[in-house]
Length: 289
DNA sequence: CACTTGACCTGTCCGC
DNA sequence: TGCGGACAGGTCAAGT
Image (tube, rainbow, N blue to C red; front, side, top):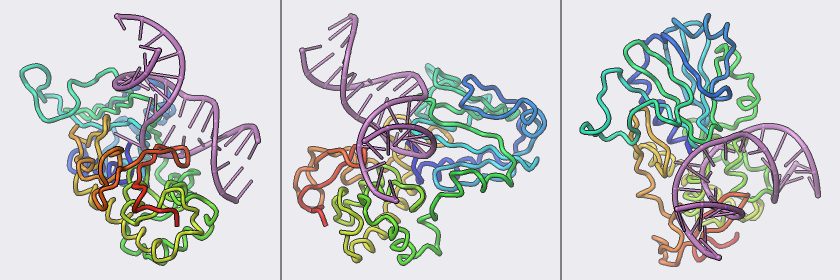
């Protein structure tokens, strides 16, 4: 699910909804979904105040005033949904939330925020929330390896090209998906950006001419930025912090558009498998090299 | 080292 | 209607 734009959208929602609230209690229904010792939970979570929300790569970080943080990875199907205790749901009271009454059968963790609740729903149970000392976060393996944020102002075209230098023999799509090259791109935006740059997903990095790599830099930034503006991509599961869908997929050029005409040349978009992932591309305007 | 496969899980869809 | 298999936005470990 959630790639950079989706996690960023959740982050912005939580900025408005939960900063300043106190955690009154937490309840977990699946061990891997919430990883924290009983003692840490009691000492550093219950009673703590939420002071700040951050995002790095596809990871969400909720900083508490106890020098601890909730570190969250939504993986494929995770949702973080805020709901006031007095919100009315169910028959006769529809709203525009994609999720209905909570908790539901995908709810793995519930945080009681004293008058509201934060639900961690995760159909496939791949996602997780860890309670960690804030200062330890940069030391976890993933953050030690992860590449730069592609939307940071100081991330240049030159930096982008340099990040691919050590991946010359990889397929370009595999390199884009590799979080140690650059952070935040997943299967949707890899396909979309490669279409924009007119690069076949199975091209070896070394066979991509530098001007195309420069184009790819622009396209990565473009699709991520556009998707943030559209509130991310909702295929099935993804919702923002208020339970609402994102609309990027109605703007997608190739992703989930197999057998439809390419918006640029009219050829039929194909779906194949590259780097172990379902891959959409236009066979006419995305030639190898 | 690069690449593939399997694992982690549940749910849905498609063909028989 | 039931059943088996493939597949789904991500990462990590192990094998080739």
